[in-house]
Length: 284
Length: 121
Image (cartoon, rainbow over all chains, first blue to last red; front, side, top):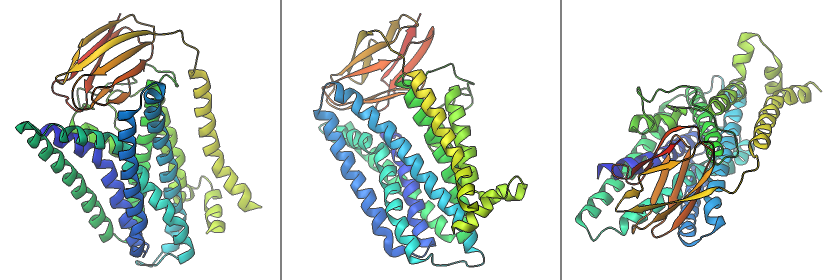
């Protein structure tokens, strides 16, 4: 029971986090009526996950061997692109919001952003969706045994746990000032996306597309990837107990590059360049 | 003008990132000989054999058959492999050439019992 709880919680955690953030985001920019974009994105992803689960179970041959891997890697990098774009947008617009706590972002801007937010919801749910669907489906076939019901109970509790997490993020996000919210989610998304980059690079190394190497360091004695805290941190900030050099490089390059996009004012404050500031001003 | 220059300067970072990844892709995808296939079975939430000996330095393929009535996920943190194998199905998992050492793997859906390792020597 405990085991199935952990599996589902781990799979659902990232999706719940992203859903909580985007719902709260819509509230903060004054468009709660647009929740449906997120809901539709999430629901479509659920449908796609079920389709993929069925597909994997039915298909065979080279397509079944490579298809899921290619899709998994593709979803990771699409998610990175979407989150980067979103963070960049928040970085550009944070400055506009000065002094107005509940400013309604203008209609035209917001409309453009809605499909984007829906897509973030889609990738967030779809990323671990097919796996979770297959896992739950497997549990449903085990119900003749008494332990099967316990396992299903644990899995349901895991889903509920993930949903509560998402709800807490949503409620917490709603209570922040719009500045606080933009800043907090930018930081969160920056490291989450950095972790996704590391995951993507790792998967490509596992598939032999990128050269693999020895781990740069080993902190598994301190915090193991297999542990629940380790795996939640892996999803949240990209923690790895034994990262490869390429994963670390990908993570760092991403966090630095995207960080300058997400936080254009940091550049200005350091006086390194007023380029970003000028760009932001012209662009708004 | 300033606008265009400023934006392209900012996008330059992204272009660089893409270029670096592109380079890594082309250097990484080297040609490989036909790898040997190693059969592995999942039954009663366990892998058999649970210990797989392979020669170091040669890529190989794990042909994993799931004989259980529910799906299992073959996962190895060390090898960066995650592969769901539905009930009654067989999956081919390509594994890169390994340095000598021990590489644990487990069944994500039954991590308590489904444990194994690959030993490259």
